Image 1: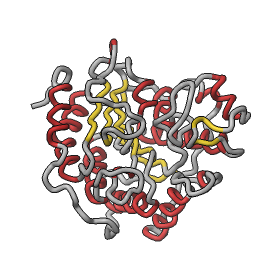
Image 2: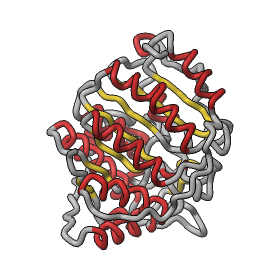
Image 3: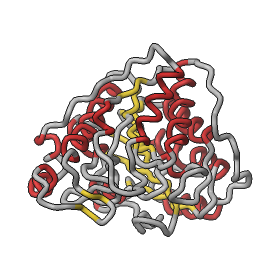
Length: 329
């Protein structure tokens, strides 16, 4: 198995939202510190900052300018525009480009960056997101890609950007009936993109057994049939059972096993999206890094809450919807 390289820079801690906002610098700084303790020889790859021309591959000029020149105070009521936001968000986009570039050359990588990006549309942001990192990387380095979004929230921005595109397969697992309220199983793409936008909304408390079934019965079969040049994983650690913002119940071990399953079968890059317990974010990433480097690591959060595939009915609905497009049993 190819080792996992980590893209990280202290610039990702250069802003803090006011009050007790959950999207805070510790989401990445705690993980960077614990990775360094796990592997004292680790060498983080410093990202480059995306050019304005890179952002324009996805976003409208007026929207980019509104962030760059702070013509708005916020993009939604949970996503304020600070002095450093343009610098940090464009560097997160650059890190995504770097990760995909490394991936295409055969080097698996993880972008330990913030802000996240999967709620960003061409003309607007929201949900803590400003620029759509995954989409920018796909447009900057053309290819046939699969984006596997395992954030607890549906990546409505990414889904919308590629909704009628058959060169990018978008698969999302997310908790049903929470923000942003999109990602119904019936939303499967349009035009030439029909069948290339697959949503698996899951009921509250779904966890290890449900995700293992989703991987074995839907996600991996579809990825193999699509045969992408690379898989981009939009990694949200907010489906973890310790996350404060939602009620799915993944353990660290299940997260790690899912990611390893993809890494073993495809060229892979991983982009950090959500995850609001910094210790859980670190636990998942350290466990994954250790597995690819054959280092000893004991997971902090090992409790398994879903033993019986709580989301079985939801998975069956998804299989019925997707079997029109993909070879699913």
